[in-house]
Length: 332
Image (cartoon, rainbow, N blue to C red):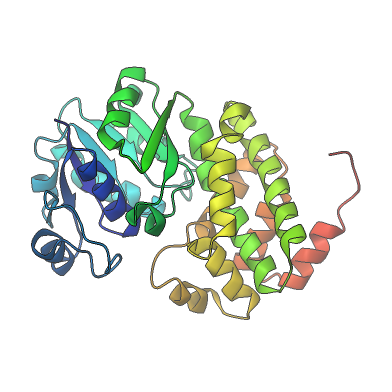
């Protein structure tokens, strides 16, 4: 039986821990807050993030990283992208030899412009073939209620990818394997930014035509960046690209879409963050790092640039719309 350490007890970390346990994997979670760890272990619920979801009886939780990591052959990294480095630095000495590390985080690190798998390798200095990522149309609450979905597990080692696939395959959660880590991570990082833009459009009262146009042009700039970094276009046309983009841009459960809608309603960044109930809208920070990464590779990403300027440079939403609509006409 696989033994997994799920490092992070937010909504997605808790949901994925449930998936693993339902698939027959032995799961120990690490939670930052003692009351969350206690509730997961004794009451089999996470009142902070998934209060109405009953967790499988086999899941345990602890505030001690070493206890969570002990004996694990799968280490699931379920913390926000911008805190991954600091957390991994604290945990790296306790990570078991030859364990596979699976990142659930979606973003590009501020400053270094590294993708999440690159951050993992940089901090731990482990073989890149031991590092994978998971991405797809995976809204946590829908999966927690066991609504059917599919996902992609990308890892350069096909054997590890298949082992991860078996560790989380359930009747409601269908994982596919892929070797294209770059494509999966680029898709996951960019979709949050595009979802924020779609949230702004929806918040302004615009309809399906507008949102669909943003999604489609957002996919185009995501593919441009992915290809420049070495991704396969087919990856971004699949679950980790189009699938994740549709889910995150369309659902009211999406934190990034909700954040954008609150900005459109006139909220400040701080107020919009409160509207997501304290959970991180990754697109707010990723828009800056993704824009910088695109500039480094001379890739044009106008929607990403507009989101960054609205969130961090004081550009008004009306000005952002005018700048996008006023760009020169050209072939698709």
